[in-house]
Length: 489
Ligand code: GLN
Image 1 (tube, rainbow, N blue to C red):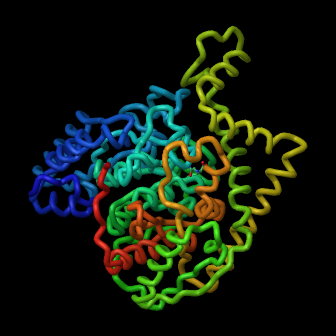
Image 2: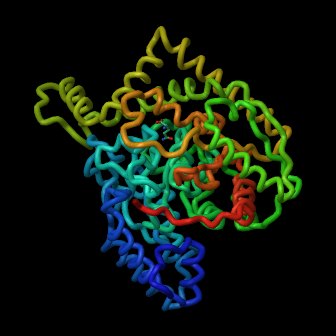
Image 3: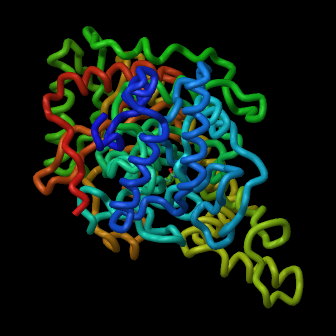
C-alpha cells in the first residue's frame, strides 16, 4: 500500500489488514511517523507510547498470521484522552495534582478496545479535569487547531479532536460533560459523538460531574462511528448507571436512506446569538438532508435558555464532591511544606489545581451549602427536569433535532481566557443535551470563509444513536464537498 497509511479511516485499516494488503505494524509505524512530523506544531499528545504501540501491533500481526481473529479493531491506532484510566503510561487529567499518577487498572472502555485489537498510541491533551472549552486549562501544554495554528482546538477534549484532524490517530476517545466531545469536533472538523447517558460504561473515566459525563469517540466518518460504538456500548456491572439495553448492530444504520425522516429545528437555536455565516452553513446542511427526502419541522425547546446556568450549578456541585478525593493523602500531589493535616489539604489543593478547577470547586461548594442548596442546587434540578421534558415534547413531532454545535468557529488563543462566562457560552448549544441525557453528534458541515470548520449537531431520542449515524452517513454521501485535510499552518 501507499506511504500514507496514516490517512486511512479505521474501517479502511481493518479491511486492508484483513485482506493482507498491509499489517498492523506498517499502519502503526506510519501513524507514529505522522505524529513525529506534525506534533511539534499540533501538540495533541501529552504522552506518546511508541514502543508499546509497536509491540502491540507486532503481537496483533503474529496472531493474524497464526490464523486467529484479533477482533474488529485489529491494528486500528487509537489515542485516549488523559482522563481514561490506563495501566500503560500515566493518567494525569492534565492536572498538576495528578501528574505522574499511574492507574492500577484499565477502565472498561479501554479493556473493550484492547479486546477488539486496538493499538493505543498514547494520551491526549485536555482541559484540567475536563473543565473548559479550549484546552487552554491544561497544565501540560497548548494544543493548536490543525486548521489554523493560532486558534484553539476547542475543549475539553482538544487533543482528541486535533489529533484526528491532523491524522495522528485513526480514532480518538474523549469525554463529554457539557460539550467536550462535540464542541472540539466541530472546531476541528471531525465527527464526535456523545452517546446517551448510560449507553457506554464510565468505569475508569476520572469523574468530573457523574450525572453528565459520557465517554465517546472522535472519528473521520460515520462508518467508523458505527464500528467504535459496536465495540464500546453496553451494560457494565461495574457502572451501575450503565443501561441494560441491548446494543444494536450499528452497521445496519449505514444505509443511504433518510426518506420521510423528520428533522426538528428548534427556533431557540436560530436567534441572533448565532452568527450569519454559521446559520447559513447549518441551514445548507439541512437542505442537503431535505434533498434526500427528509422533512423539516419547527420545534421549540423553551427552557434551554437556562441550560448554561443550570449546567454550571449542577456540574460544579458534582465536581466539588468528586474532586474531594484529591487531598494529598492517598495519591497525587502533596505540598512538601505542610505542617498539619489542614495545611496539607489547603496547600496541596491550592498549588495542585489550576484557577478554573478552583473556581468550580468554590462555586460547587457554595451552591450545595446550607442556606443556598434550595435556591441553587435544588432549583437547578427542577429546571433540569423541565429541559428534559422539552426534548421529550419536541421528539413527539420529529425523529432527530438539528442545531449548530457552536455559535462561532474556532477562536484565537487568549480570546476568552479572561472572561469565564464568555468561555462558558461556547457550550450554549451542547450543555442542554447532557442535562437531558440524550445522544448528540457533531458532524463537519463545511468551512467558513476564513477556512475554519463548522459543525452540525444532530440530537436523537434516548438510545437512538443509530439514527444519528444514519443521518451522518447520508449527509456524508450527498454533501458534495470533499473533506479537505487540515493545512496545519
Ligand atoms: N466546556 C464545558 C465545561 O467547561 C464542558 C466540559 C465537558 O464537557 N467536559 O464544563
